[in-house]
Figure (cartoon, rainbow, N blue to C red):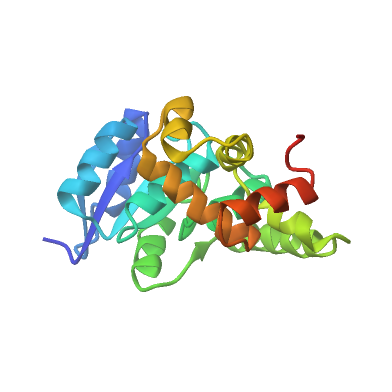
Length: 217
């Protein structure tokens, strides 16, 4: 058995075949499971507790909040994102959501085992030109006159929905019912919101949201 255990996930069988082939000749990497849906992905991660999950943004429907929720739920597994997206804001967002690496579909498959080994050792994997685009976007964002805009820009669409409902006075159970997510996921979102906006509780969040026009009362 390989030293590095990996689960791969994409909704296209040909992509899964390509990912498997990319590591087939590397004795230190073993693919434990291949998944074509979010449900099977979570089942496989819980069953195998892999070192690395290589997951496409297609299977996550290009939703950064889905990526963040996934990373939160499997925090012992390092996540590498496979994507066709090139916009620096999305790629930076993927890293902010907890991904440890980004691989673009058109890259040579020889980079995949290199990326897997790097994130397993605690590093972050970005191809050089992508890293340059993300860094440029980061520097441009830092030049914004209002430093609070950077905090707000880090919020995911789902987190904005949670903030809206918090400001309307809904408790976690009601939020979970309205958004069709678990209460545990609501709690994960709140923890992430508090961290990003640097607030400590629901009251300070409501005050922050009002002050910075995140909601209209």
